[in-house]
Image 1 (cartoon, helix red, strand yellow):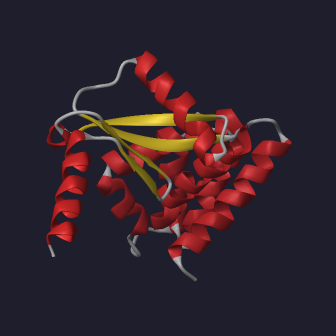
Image 2: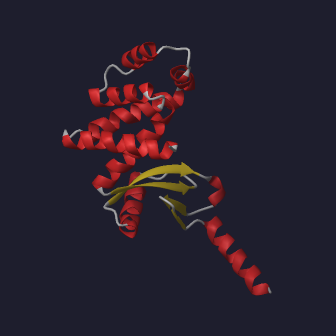
Image 3: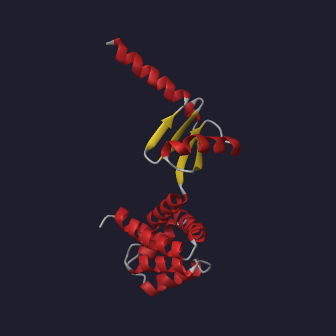
Length: 181
């Protein structure tokens, strides 16, 4: 079974539990902390995946490292350990966040700009583009990219809206090449 499919199944099960208990936001916050720990500590993941480390030892490590987590999150981590799927943890978390955003009517967007965006600019972009993708709002991650020259490029799911100067110059270049022949 593919990692993506596994991640979706675990995330859906956890999301359903969280939704029943009205803990979607709380669990999402805790999962994001777990994700950050896993991404910043590659050695931890390697240790949890090592075949010579006993399962009970791995569980004790997770239990002590993440002692403040709600039982649903801890039990999900234990389940991933038991089923030798701990390497899918970050994917499960990403899928959970996607499900939570979907339930709230929020889409994740990455905005590439020449300089960091202000809160007002992020809000304006969210209002302008949320309706284009059928959502109530956008959760924006801003990436500074000096190669854009000016303007912004927005990525929402698999859609890209390119309003950058670099993008406009590329389109003009393609038009000139097409008309030349």
